[in-house]
Amino acid sequence: MPSVRRNRWFGDQDQEILRLAVPAFVALVSEPLMLLADSAIVGHLGTPQLAALGIAGTVLQTLVGICVFLAYGTTSAVARRIGAGDHRGALAQGIDGLWLALLLGVVLALAGIVFAPQAINAFNPSPDVADHAVTYLRISCFGIPSMLILLAAIGVLRGLQDTKTPMVVAISANLANIVLNLLLVYGLHLDIAGSALGTAIAQTAAGVALVVVVVRGARRDGAKLKPDLPGILASAQMGVPLIVRTITLRAAIILLTFVATALGTTSVAAHQVAFTLWNFLALALDAIAIAAQALTGRALGAGDVAGTRSITRRMMWWGLWSGVVCGLALWGLRSIYVPWFTTDPEVRHTLAAVLLVAAIWQPLNGVVFVLDGVLIGAGDGRYLAIAGVIAFVLYVPLALSVLWLDGGVVALWWAFGGFMLLRLLTLVTRERRDSWLVTGATR
Image 1: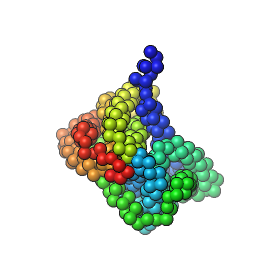
Image 2: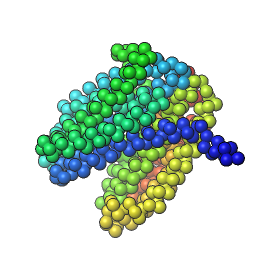
Image 3: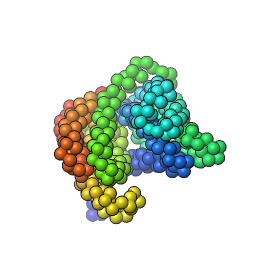
Image 4: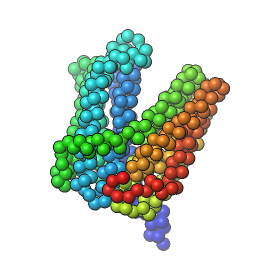
């Protein structure tokens, strides 16, 4: 009897989901931890340096974030070929992704170096903050090629059903980043330039480490290492819809912050804390989405439609219950963590109301993240782009109506939940149909 119950409630599919999701979560968490370490180290230099880090970091994260398709698209393509038994083709596809990442990285790095003053001045900072921000951004831009190569290499390994190696490299890079920042900022007295240089070196080392792993696999399976123009162009074409999808998500978040800022100081302060927590919980839910990308691509590559349906439904339950746990933790532990962020009674009162709304939406968020990952794994980027545009267009009047009607930040978070609901409706509509279930080594 015990064995039957174990198989019913926690079977092979669940073990495989956890095998991929847990290391992915650790790797995902490492990125905000790296940013926190940079902020702590730079913060002791002075307020202008800390403000500069915030502005330059936003520009840098935007440039790199738009290219997240290098990880997502590569995961899908590689996983499909793995499912079809074409290991050599999978690694060749991964190598094409690495070359594309290098080319994009060089272009974005040059653009960032040349246009750094204009990008920073768009935030209208004070002159001393602007000088520090331009310095940080220009030095950091030298690391953009490595950052994008790192994304592509992570995508290759996820497609190969390996999330442990990226986790180990991410932890190592975090530790190296802290040591290098302390050495360069305080040991060699390079100020904020030392922080930028240390982070760039750590990320470059991480990128090189994962590229070595991918190249070794390619050589072992006899895959080509030289750049293949048709393959690179195919990877770029596959990434365009995912770029559109990513832009719609970022635009929704920017609009959320814009409206919260317009509602006043207390509102934006409460919003900032709530969104920081929401973003952290999103990493936990996104880890399941990463497992969904890898498992869906592999199943469809193997021509297993029934298996794809089965694992999709199972991951939807994982997303739902993970969201329930995240929501309960967000609301139930508020008395413990809220004092870490603010001592202002008015902000705390507003924050409590916002957190209740954010907690209520977590189960829905979990399902949205999973279905997003499933369709990315299926290579259904075109639909995701269209659905993203539709959800954003309908969300804009929701968010702006809060401002027009002076509804307050709590109403704004209900509107943001509406955006996630719109995403859920478009994703569930797609999942229930068969048009995304395209089998074979390529879509």
